Length: 144
Image 1 (cartoon, rainbow, N blue to C red):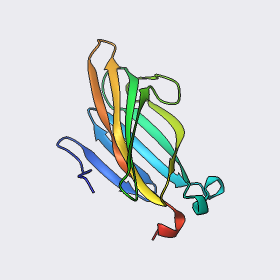
Image 2: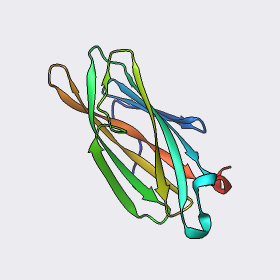
Image 3: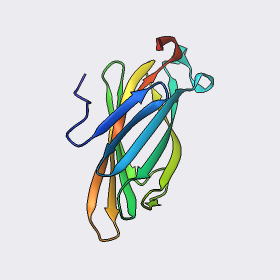
Image 4: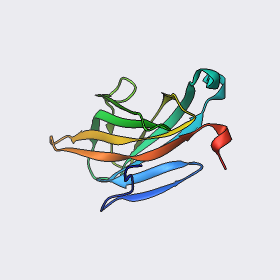
C-alpha cells in the first residue's frame, strides 16, 4: 500500500466517526458509510457513501474549484476521479465557515480506500490545494 500518511504541516485524526486532515488552513473531514441496501456482494458491487465537511480556517474567502480523488479497491485497482467543484457546485467558503456535501463511491471489492486533493482560489487569485484524508471503505463484515 502506498504511503498515505501526513506530510509536514498537516494534522490528521481518524477513527470510526471519520477522518480529518488540516492543510493550508483548510480542514477536511470525511465520514464514510457502507450501504448494504445498495450493494450486491454476489455481483462484486459494494456501495459506499461519504459525508464531507470542509472548513476554512484561514483569514480570507476561498472558492473550491476542482477535486481529485484516487480510489483504490482491495485488489489494488486504481481509479482517478477528477472534476470541477463538488456535486455540481464550486462553493465559496468564508473564513470560519464550512461547506458540507454527500456523495458516493462503488467498489468491486468489500474494502478499499480513497484519498485526494481539493483545489481552491482566493479572492486575490492565489491558487492552492488542500489534502483530502485517506478514508477506508469497508463492508460491515470487515469492521472490528
